[in-house]
Length: 466
Image 1 (cartoon, helix red, strand yellow):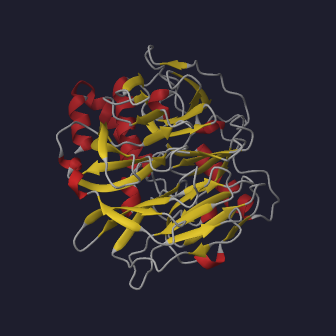
Image 2 (tube, one colour):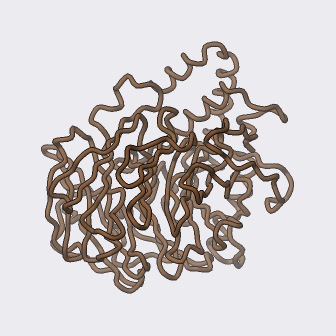
């Protein structure tokens, strides 16, 4: 549906589109360079409590910075045991800047030096579908969601910064498939979650007042949605919660390419009642909430949406035209992940509410490869070798050193047409010629199609509130 609509819109450039599509498919089939074959794209961004470390989930691993975004390294999917298919894992950073990554068979913890990692023993063979942490990072939550016979899906909680996890409560059987979990920043005993329940299918919202041990449920079916995701909890009022919910049957709506209408719901009574406060045309990939709870942002990759903001309950206004793939607000700064082909950056930040965006990571060729570790480490053995191949083939970066400086892109202003960048991938370009709008549109669709992942995650928006 998406491809056919896009090609129809590009009828004047059919030969160009056909050529690019053929080259793109060749690139995506390069399994030796990318285990899942998806178009390289940025998704969800998370920061450590002190803001020193920034982790950006990609469709091909993680970009991670430990100097507030000044330099970036790459952690590969194979290192974290989820590189066998198109899967977008949950992740978070704790108080000591360690990276936690959920997977279909457990939970991995990457050390602060990024050179060692380990598995959390009592979560082995558990499907960790989502993670969250408290404001200070000392409380870490995981929630499991397996459809296997005999499974008990539940909240797992750590009160020692992620050193150890304890399963809470009796849990739910495999008919209850959790999708998100969130802990209130102002009261860590208040926990919210969402799930899809089968036989019959229902979309369920959960509230816990004892840290996740017991959960009281309510239905979101009255909104006619297929699934729901806790987007964020107000940092000062634990009763105020935002939920993103995809309209049922939205994939068949005739709303144009990449349309996936999503509702933004708000409750001010801890989930007893909800009301719709916004509706997007595309999938609501990004959501962010200011520390004081007064400003709310959401964004999608659909051209009708861009980046939208509401202040003190006012109607949402469009503040930027970037194609949003993820949002995060942290200590006065809005972090924005976007379509790097169309917006000239994969990650940017804003200190004026999103009107101007300062690129932090423009091209994946700016990644410095795997962290510098010993030759006997898995990081070097797995990610080091793979990066060399991936950088040269799929990304087709310049032959020069990966640490070489790249000419900065101008700051992106909402009132100015977004600058057209020159992607590093030669799948998109021939020689030094600037890509046509037809080519860029095709790659935008490729990025959107490639962003879909496994089961509940395949529909889950990429960004959540910090």
